[in-house]
Structures are given as structure tokens and as C-alpha cells.
Length: 279
Image (cartoon, rainbow, N blue to C red):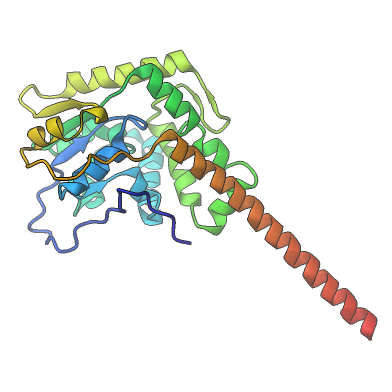
């Protein structure tokens, strides 16, 4: 099954026309946490011709989900393994890493790509938590619940669920248990503040950095990237209503699969019974 694409955004794949010798590593690292406008930023960067890896792409490419799951699981098993990750292999062909899960590894990426420009997407923390509570904080608990789990198996999304759970263990960015949908508001907001403070502490003062809110539109972004502003509206995608609808669809698909399986079983049983009576 092909997943529906959001208006204003396309699935990003590595630039296959770009030879390995032409690729110079990541040019932009966007380190905002989920629900800070990273999907809109991805769409904006791609409108500017900058191919960007975001969890939106990983959701549609199981091999990428498996790759990130392995990075996280290896780190949990042996923290030193993170120093051996082939980041060039992860991002080759992409010009930008945007948001989760790359944002959880910003320290490693800043060291690996010292020339990359850094964008920190931000929003009011109370509004951020409310949005996350209705969406990403619910994701694993919904996808692991019956019948949504059936749809993840049928449509090969179990790799995505495993990736989220592995990353939660390796680089937890909230307080609580997403498996059970239990999140501590105050401690999670404090973790978000610590994330922003840590970024500031680890950024070289000479590195180009932009603290950015999606509501600011093209102006600050294009000035920061030193490019012309496109003649099109700034993309706004990934609202919490859209996200919640996706979670609901996963549950409905699970029920539909279950209903079809039940109907098929009854049909087969009925056919067998009729066949037995006719003998």
C-alpha cells in the first residue's frame, strides 16, 4: 500500500544524480524536536532545492527505519558504538537533516559536519506540549494497540514502531512511557528547555545558527541560507489534526483487516459445510 502524501510535501530521496565525489556532507542540520514545525521546514527546504531527510521519509522507507533502529539499539547495548556510526552512509545524497531522529544526535552531527548551518525550530513550550500530547506522544501506544498493530504488520510498518521504541531507550527526549501513553508534562517541558540550552552550549560561536519559528515564513530562512525567496506561499503542513487523523486511520485499517479476515473465515467455513452436506 502506498501511503498518502501530504499536500505541499514530497517524499525525499537521496539525489541520485549527484556523484559521491560531488557530495560534501550535510549543509543544513535542523535540530528542533518533533512538533516544532520540522515538517513544514522540510517542505520549505525542498522548495528551495535542498533535499532533506525527515522522519516523514523514514516512515515510507523501511530500510531507513531499520538503519535508525540499529543505531539506537547498538548504542543501548554499547554506548561507545555511537562513535563508529557511518553518518556519511546515513545521509549520503541528502543536503539537510531535519528534526527527529537526527535532532537527537545533534552533538555527533555537529562534530561530523562542522561547516553545516544549524536551524533550531522553536515554539511556545505549552503549545508544543499540547500538540505533542495529541500526536507523537501517542504514536507507539496507538500503533502497538489492537487492532492498529495489525495494519503495521500488513503494511510493513513494524520497523517504524521498533525504531521509535529503540530511540526512546537510546535518546529519550521526554519523561514518561510512550508505550502506555503516559507523559509527565512539567518534566518533559524541562527536558525540552535542556535540549535548547545544550544546543547553545555545544554550538561554536562562529557557526551559522538560526533560531526560527515557522510563522516567520520565508524571510529569515532565505536570508540565513543566502538564497532568493521563492514566489510561492510558505508551506504549512503536519498539523496535529492531520497527525491525529493518521493515527485514527491506522486503527480503522486494523479493524478493516480484522473484519475481512473474519468474513473470509466464515465464507470458507460455510463453503466447507455445504460441500460436506452435498456428499
